[in-house]
Amino acid sequence: MWRAAAPLRALCRAPLPPPPAPRRRAVSVAVTPAAGLADERVDTRVAGLAAGQAVTLRAVVADERGCLFQSCAHYRADGRGQLHLGTDASHGGDYTGVEPMGLFWSLAPAGMERPYQRLVPRSTGTPMRVEVLVHQGHSGPGAIHGPVMAKAEVQRWFTAPGVRRIRLKEGSVRGSLFLPPGDGPFPGVIDMYGDEGGLIEFRSSLLATRGFAALSLPYFDFEDLPKVMKEFNLEYFEEAARFLQRHPKVKGPGVGVIGTGKGAELALSMITFLPEVVAAVCISGCSSNTVADLHYGEMTLPGLRFDMNKAKATTIKEALAKWEEKNGQKASEAKEVKLYGQIPPVERMDESLSTLVNCEKLSLSTNCIERIANLNSLKNLRILSLGRNNIKNLNGLEAVGDTLEELWISYNFIEKLRGIRVMKKLKVLYMSNNLVKDWAEFARLAELPLLEDLVFVGNPLQEKYASDQKNNWIEEATKRVPKLKKLDGILVIKQEEDEEGGGN
View 1 (tube, rainbow, N blue to C red):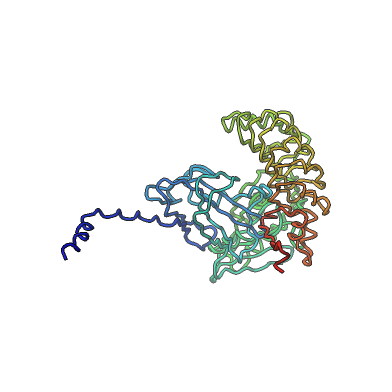
View 2 (cartoon, rainbow, N blue to C red):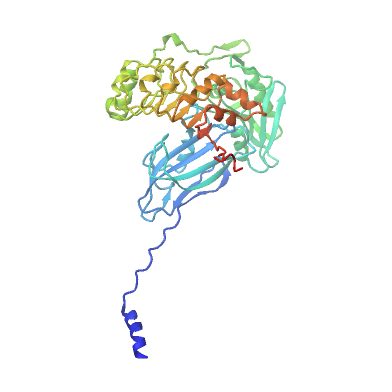
């Protein structure tokens, strides 16, 4: 018996194995409230990170037309592996500092989209769905982000239960009247937007949730109103003010007006000349009447116009000087140079580009360039952004044909793709909203041996073929360019055929 127990005693004296390491919680992101009014602040927290871990937080949303908007910011977790956007500062990305709502107010069109678009909700009855993602590591705007560690969806509503929407066709006045719940009376306000035209209702709907009787007032490009912003009569706005002032749900003695852009100019004119208007809020408007003449009785306020003959284009040399001053770096040493959206715009890709010998990514989008030129010295160029210009052909790209991997050239006037075959390393081509209209030109893309990601939406060929429900645009396009892995943002899934004849 004692002999049998000896091994047991030895086992008892042996050191115990170390306890297993504690398991780290899965990374999570919580945005509260998950559903709420669009003008309410949200609380964003991340948990489950390592102490001091670097992450990129990103917000992504698509508008009703499918246009993608996004934002990003760089953060580091605290000692407990947590983040709170209400107290922790962003160290980079689209904003810096403590900005609890930074991911929302910094939303801007994604790289492939037309720049300078506004995220304007067109429907007040459905929420805007914003996806908030946590990516591993720090990645800048427009860069490829690290793996997704956690994500959450937030619904941003523009109306509340009980708010009433009344479509208005009263005399010459058009629009929508939003009334809060209850019997009232409520303070009245006229709501106008800018030179985009049409009926924009979301702010009026939100004002009604806060107790205002809000009239969303279009003034051109809606129903039987003038189609273009050529001239206006202040009597139209006077009629709208009197209608709202006399409405039984509106308390007087006067009404207010809020305007953005051109709407702000009109708001200034309304409070100046109309006794019914007693308060005005003007956002991003000019201090004078611009573009369109404004008539009131026998008086005319001429629209202040722009003399483009006096405008002088920005040269590449001038744009580079501004870039160097802003970034504190020599452009000749930089790997990425951004010259997009110059004011006044760049019109020529001149010989000053030859100084960018180390540049790997060059952005010249949103200018007035008509011809691709002077890229011969950019021997390291991998990404070239030329979207939103006046380019009509691809001549000039042969200079970077051996290195260029991505070409962003949407919103130009390109009809023919002759010369595309020189792009031997091109993997990504964003050329939406150009003028390609036949399959013969599209088929030239098959000459690109490495092309795998193509955005072609908005070309006449795509629009014509996609509108015919009998045809499948993606199927027909990938027949002609079979190596594509992604077309118009959609992953291409090919049906693999059995090498033995389908298994028969």
